[in-house]
Amino acid sequence: MTGLDSWYAFMKSQDRAEAGKALWDLLHPDAVFESPVVHSPQRGRDITSKYLASAEKVLGGPGFSYVGEWTSANGAVLEFKTMIDGIEINGVDIITFDAEGRITNFKVMVRPLKAINMLHRLMAEQLAAQS
Image (cartoon, rainbow, N blue to C red):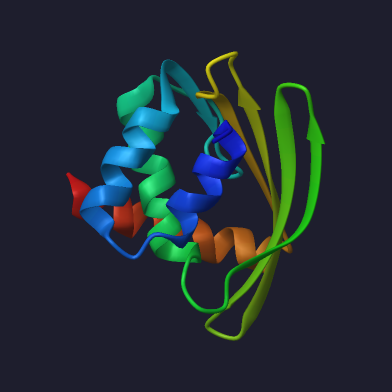
């Protein structure tokens, strides 16, 4: 199973405990998460795991789908769409993997602006609930 296959398995998993462990194992210890609303990159497996688990809770669900995929030897760009509170959200996940298939960098870009503003609020609430 490639790193990208593991990412898709995480996103489809219904067992949150198992998914959490799978996500942890998928992340390189020095993984970096780049958010569309936080200026500085978030560094390390712990914070990256929290952001990605929160994003899955906020964005995931029956309306979430990947609608495009572009891959390279060590990465992928995955276009997604979903609908939250009547706002259509469109974005991309830009993922870089190491030779073992672990995520080393995960960057999210989202549009339109009202979606970013809503996600900023929802992600802050979700991250606060994890603390």
